[in-house]
Amino acid sequence: MRIVEVIPSTEDWAWWFNTPQESVPQYTIDEMRKALHNGELWGAFPQATKAFSSPFKVTLKGKSDWGVRFVSYRVLDTTGRTPWDYAKAHLRAALRLTLGSRRKRFSTQDWEAMRRGAYGPQYAVPGEYSDMAYVDIRGAYYTLYTMYWATEYYPKRFMGKHAVLPLWHPELRDNKLARNALWGLARATRISLYTPNGEHHITAPHELSYPQMVLGTTDALHAVAHVAVRQFGAVYVMTDGYIVPHRLVGLFVDFLASMGLEGRVLEVGDAWVGGVGAYRIGGKASRRMQMYPRPVDTIRHSVAEWLLPRHKWLVGVINLALGGRFHDYLWRPLGEEEMLPDDVGAELGEMMA
Image (cartoon, rainbow, N blue to C red):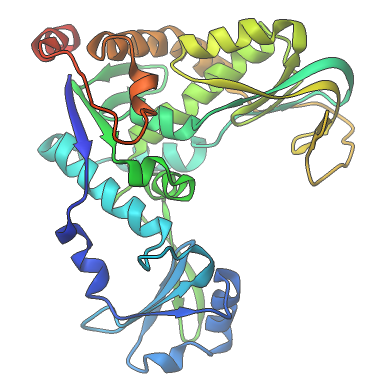
C-alpha cells in the first residue's frame, strides 16, 4: 500500500493569503448571513455581484476577482486561518497526491445517492433502563473517511480498494473542527449563493466532493449501528454514540476494535431515553429532554448486512499493510518516528488487484 503523508507546503496557502480578508469581531457566521440579507456587508465591496457563504466565512465576489472575505472571529487561530482553510488545503492535497488522474468524474446518480443517503444512523427506543453504558467512537468520521479513501464503493453492488492510503498531517488530525470541515467539504452538494436581491440555493456538485468515500463512511456507521442494536441490545444510537447494557460493553468495544474503531465508555449508570437526541445517562444528558411516543429506526439494515463482511475485509487488508497498526498509526503521537514495513507495497498491490 502506498502511504501518502499529506503535508501542505507554504505554497499551498498562497491562494488564501492573496485574497483580501477582514475579521469582523462583532459578527458570528449567522449574523454575517443576516447582514447580507440586510445589505450591510455589500458596501465593503461595491463591485460585488454575488456572495458565497461557508460554515466559517462570507466571500463577496466581483466579475474578475474574489474581492473581500469576512471571517467569523470565533474560528480564527493565531495564524489567521479557519478550520475550513486547513480542511480545503488538506483535501485538495490528498486528492492530488493519493488519487491523481485515477479520480473519476462522478455521475448524477453518484451525487444523488450522496445527497439522499449520506446520513448517519439514528435509533431510539423511549423508556427507562438500568445499568447501561454510553459508548462513543473516537474520531469516527476521521477514522472511517481515511479508511474508505480511494475505495470504489457502490452500495450492495461492489466494493474494491486501491493500494493507497492518506495519513494526515497533525495540523489536521489534532484539530477537530478542521477534521469535521473536511468531511463537510467532501459531502457537499449544495452551494449557498447570495445576491444583492436575496438568497438563492444552487444544488450543484462541489469541486471537492467525493461521493464514494462519503457513502462508504456513512454506510460503515450503519453497519456498526446494525450490530449494536441486533447483537448488543443498544437502545439508543446517534451516529457514533451508543447506549448499550453495561454487562455487554466490553464485548461491544472489542467489536468496534474489529471494525478498526476505538470505543470509549463515557458514562455508566441508569439511562432515560426520550427519543433521537433526547437521553440522560449518569452525568451525561442531551440538551433536549422531550419524550417521544414511538421508537425511531433509520438504520439501513440491508446495506449494513451486505457491508459488514466487506468492511472487515478492508480493515484486514489495511492492518496487514501497516503491520496491524492502522488505528495506532492514525492517532500516533506528534513527532513519533514512523516505522512502516518496507516490502508491503507490491504484496498488497497484488492482493487488491
